[in-house]
Length: 133
Length: 169
Image 1 (cartoon, chains in turn blue, red):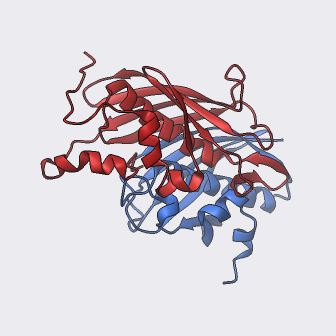
Image 2 (spheres, chains in turn red, brown):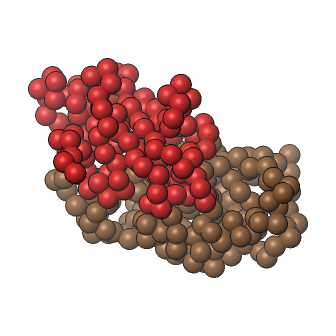
């Protein structure tokens, strides 16, 4: 089970929950998590907190990749996150991709989307502000 | 425009007892959440510190993801505490404003109050703190929707509650 280098760079919490790197899309990382007891809320459904954890990790992973492309080194600190839950997450693999809406010198604004088998039908979205110290 | 007190065909919601079921299974069980305290319209849960929940390779600080899970669960329980009954709810919108990192090796406590319920929505606000509620780690605000119960499964509501039900996300 050779993990992609992008998976290795995820934080302990992501590893522990089972979040891993899936692929690159539009030069940004897609993260994924399998359905299992770790992420289950209401029986048979994804827990909203696990969904948020995946969204948040996808946001950080996207920002880290963009900063690396620009040869910028920064400590990332969360300012806030707002998660919108759009439909119930089922017993399926879940994916998330973050996009940088604005990259400033001190902070970045991101939007992140999570989906399951239908890419056009997200189950949740998030807006995040991240401080780059 | 009222706070209808439901007349549930079940026992009054008890957050301490419910926690014993909720935190045995699933995501909240994996996180190791614990019941800590409650009032008339609020519930406080504890997220114990754990090495594999760290969010930053350079600092022994809890990731923010588990804090969202903690606040989401405390939100749901504050709604049931306020309504005095378990009714299935789904998180519609949850906002977390991080004030500062939690202290190293410290448990994080999530205290959420349900300040308003309508027929179909419930509004919550709360704080996450690491020992001193006057110095919060994060502030939270959220909106939840009550899920219409399928008549065929009405009798299963309490069973569902005992199985660790909560927001489906």
